[in-house]
Image (cartoon, rainbow, N blue to C red; front, side, top):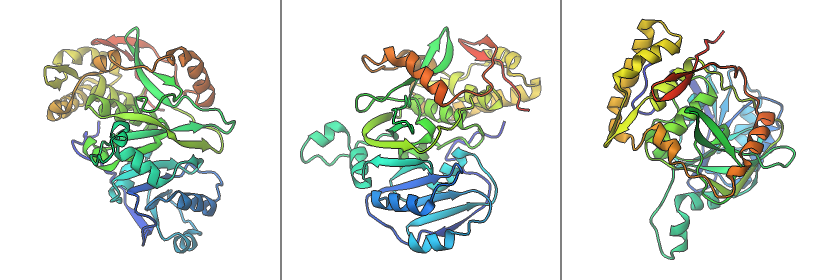
Length: 370
């Protein structure tokens, strides 16, 4: 296991920044643009983002030359092009972009998404203040949450069930998917990483774990850690996005990334005012981890040290999180239908698993990557 960072995690790879010489607005909200590939007209995309009114746009560029960057940087001087020297995972890209930002809020987007409604100034105003504070005239106290999730629809204009909720079904940890309904509905993590984040809270949380390569387990780790540490991730109906093409695949294969997620988020036990990983959980973890004794103990010990270092940041453990999760009224009946839609939109890859009991929860048998 790579060393688990106790503070904000940054990738070790080098990069070059081009452009970003001036700020386009003063809303306090900038955009981080992740590129999934495909032939999307960049000039049109930047024009649309310019109209939205972001302070800056940070465009994450894959390794390789971009022949249009010089022209685009002159036309859009508020765009920072970050050229990566080598490919890095999604979480590393977001953390790297955040390190280049000074805006108090940032919006993570993909190049195959379009903003249907919502201006940056209005987004920032809404997210800086809670609904209750906005209703109080003259209130100036900010009530920011860690992440605010927009409504997202697919190319057929169907609203996707992008809100996730943790669930223990026969003591198995899994996700339930809900369609955004009322304002401020909680979500375990931001779907596809898309959302408006509070920069200060994001950095203090540690950002995404760069030691996890799978986007799915990065999001699961980020979401669980956020809620276990008392942060809030909620939806808003005031911002609506649409995918231009197919929704990207979701790979939830149980592999070494799952081991890291499990040790950091599922194995800690909260007791009193602090969390810890009991030593009694090692034998069963080792038996089902698929690792040799030395590496299993190394991973387990590293995670115990990390939890001990952050023990007072925990407000609950995974069991209490799932047991006390608040489901929106009249929406739980949609779960089966939503899971079917998500399966069609984002089919799981490598999802054949054997489940074994470990500690108080079930742990799927780990599959090594080929």
